[in-house]
Length: 269
Image 1: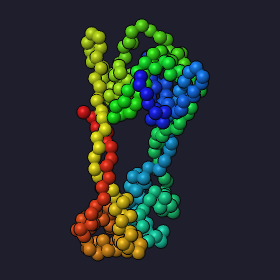
Image 2: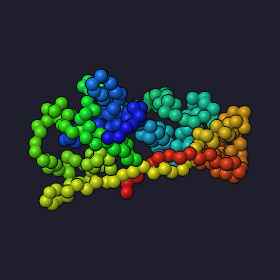
Image 3: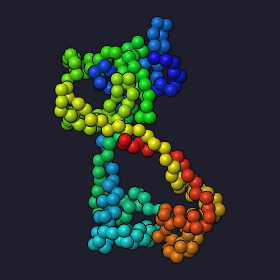
């Protein structure tokens, strides 16, 4: 391998010779005779959160016995009135929950997955590195030995063991040079078995920077309420009906230069 700055190596995916993920590089420990990589793993956890869409539907059914975009606007209007909120104030999860509890409704929830960082106790000697590479999907290292497989107590067998589509679908795929290329889709029958991979990359696209636009607009109005009133007046709607699209249309009509930002989006080839 060549040379790379230490901080640019942090976060690199480390995979052993059997394809097991060891973790990601957290830091380096340099001793007189060797260099060790300290790793961390991202451990998934499940959390229960408010299901905002179902909550809005429950409120609309309770109040109007119907669910539609039109009734969603009516819901917001009634909510602002009951909670004594400014007409231009955006409605968030907090207001919806407060209103639902006031009406005695159950709060629907859903489970979401998040990841927390856990340090790996044992460091990896950099002498074990076989390949290092980088693609738009990130940096990766392949080790010479079944480091993680041994830690897990996985039996080491000769050759590549066969796996079913169910076992490999969605798994991250690296080529033999440690380049991350995409995710596994399915097994292809043949001698030997083949693997269909969804090749992925990141593409840079330009989109409206709405936060920057709002910041720019607020600089020319006394307060958000004044902006919403002006937009509503010019478009012939009520202030509480103003949406993001209305603000964008109004800004374009007013000849205001819309700020843009570049974002990276994952695309499948």
